Image (cartoon, rainbow, N blue to C red):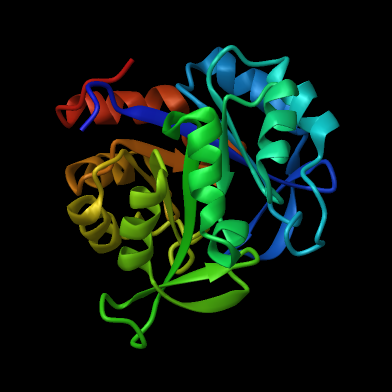
Amino acid sequence: MSLAVRVIPCLDVAAGRVVKGVNFQNLRDAGDPVELARAYGEQGADELTFLDVTATVDDRSTMYDVVQATAEQVFIPLTVGGGIRSTEDVARLQGHGADKVGVNSAAIARPALIAEIADRFGAQVLVLSLDVKRSPRTASGFVVTTHGGRTETELDALEWAERAIGLGAGELLVNSIDADGTKAGFDLELVRLMREVSSVPVIASGGAGRAADFPPAIEAGADAVLAASVFHNGEVTIAEVKEALRAGGSIVR
């Protein structure tokens, strides 16, 4: 596990606005990404994740202008995901201020993309984004989904994570579709299982509802915790999360 636990707000962006739903459905407006990015940077976020949640569904590239405007507001690492299909996409995003990139659907369609990005830019630049659902169809009980959770694949989530790490993924962003937006807490079983198979940092995502939900995710094996709506709505502050983590024995920045 990395020395200091990271707290990462996530900006799920569609049509230039931050959106949030439950189980990736019924998306509603949650604010301006540039304003939120600035606020989170000031509040002490360790990193920021920007996900263009409709880029793959709409079969288009990430919104570079919004990424650049967001990057100009923060002085912490920025991960951008959504619609990345080639190393040229990565190069262009880095030119617009991204420090790391998240890949999901395109890597599933063509796993060689992971190796291509890692070889050209280094594994530290590459975050494998996993949108995971519980399913009786796989050995682990968890299946990988694509297109914002809309489409189930045949991939066992744990097997895919291991394969992607072997290809060069430097970090796993593990999002529970079942827990997403429910505010009932992280899927700790999923986090635990991912920790067991992962040799790279694991980011837990999906389900945070209060500050007390974050320490159990770290205890389950996450190196970082990511949340969206609880931060956007002001229900929990980054400072409160860090205090809860500190009280639970974690080192925080």
